[in-house]
Amino acid sequence: MTSQREEFRVEGLGEPLSHYTDAVRHGNLLFISGCGPFDEENRIVGGEDAAQQCRQVLQNVAKILAAANSSFADVIKVTVYLTNVGDRAVINPVRKEFFGQSRPASTLIGVAALALPGMRVEIDAVAAVGSRA
Image (spheres, rainbow, N blue to C red):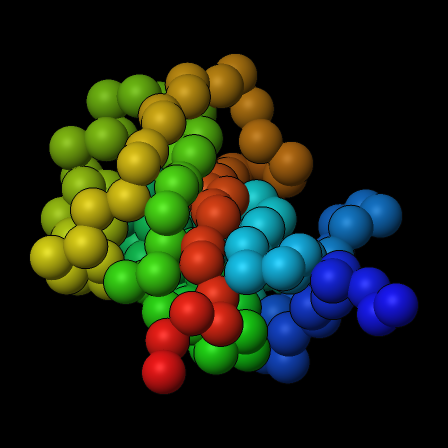
């Protein structure tokens, strides 16, 4: 019996900050770990600009989706963590850039802090994979 579980470490993303991987596929579901606004060296991109941070986060999510032969159209659910819930208005247009007409189920959570000082946004996601012809 072969395992339905596959771990993804994606080229172009920095090393995980602790004991996790970029994503895990199980069957036809891809579970994407919380993505921060990091470049390949784990430096925060976007400074204090929540929209720029969100753009970097979603570029990182795009790399993971591509590695799993998936896309934003396949994303079923996202959870967005913001250190300032008021930033929702500035990140929403960025989300539309990446998701287009697709609308995943979504949860927004306001948090006091994220993994590293200066992070304003983090996003995790669940996507369907392997179902396209």
